[in-house]
Length: 444
Image 1: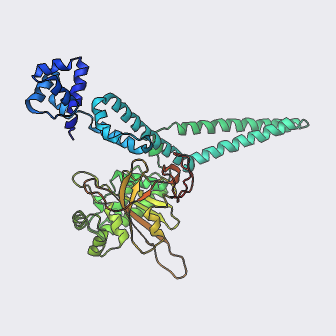
Image 2: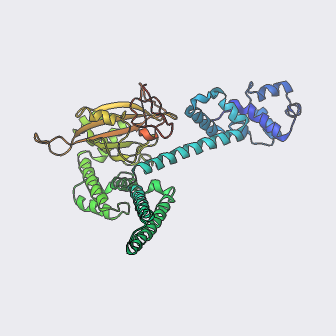
Image 3: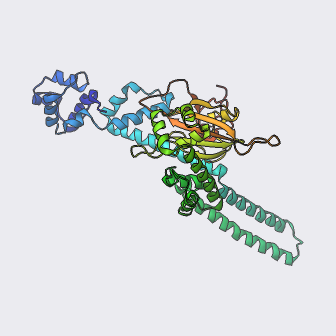
């Protein structure tokens, strides 16, 4: 968006850069120095012939004076100010700062982006250190080997009367354990040296499934419409990808695609897309119109094809009766943990406590750069019900981001991702201190 009220600041900066005197520039374009001073302090708007004359005198394109290149910088500065409210930055002066000192503004914006990248790296590494099974196994092996070496060394140092044959055995064992330790340590170093590849490496079968689905943008046109040869198509999709490396992942993918087929049969794609585009977000209307279940509609929304060449920006979360996340379709601005459970304030868990009742809530994610989402969740039984067995529950939650042109109304629940990487302070639901703040949160 053009920042025309900063035109004067750009004229002044350009004049100073060229070393021109204000009076000389004013004479060159046929105005008084006093009037040019008002222009340079953004107290007079200019355009037309005078703007062209000033641009010509300053050897610059008029567009650079009227629009500038600081729009993105202004946005970055505002974002940085929101993330650090205690700094008391003068938000009403941010456009003037960007117009007068674009270089310094660019530096601040670059540092802000770097901080965001580092926080994301910290979150990823923390998730890995806490839950990565490969890393846990490697560390366990290193610790076990060190313990064995230490025990053997203690026996040799304390036992002066050890038989020479036993001494040889102990020394041989220590040598073998030392080699094992060296190998284990090198393997651990090589694994950690993977760097950015760590985030993209699936650790559990569910992550392999998400990688496979993401490859197809969660939509499979070959499974839409008709029942003929659907089983063969499902098998062909699974056999034709390299994203599903483990047998467990292929089994999960097969079950997921079978459910996809069932949803596609009950909710025909053309009719459902038309209904959704006409009444986006109205889940109750869609349930009534198609006579289907709430979880079916929630799942189906996330599998819709692209609209106007762009993916539909919606997310989905599912958890079991224990609260562990079993499926996740990420959406920008709503960070999801790779392992374990998420924020207990999510409607996902509210629905778990209210089986059979739909739950809808406005959620504000992120304590520093808040974004709002409409979350709709439903908990219901899966499989056959029985009087002699406890119900097996599954919770499904649809995540719809706010449209800036049509913002959500109402008060939002302030939530985070998981306690370990949530920067929110004074949260009554906090389970453990955050690595970003080091605080446990007390009260509300």
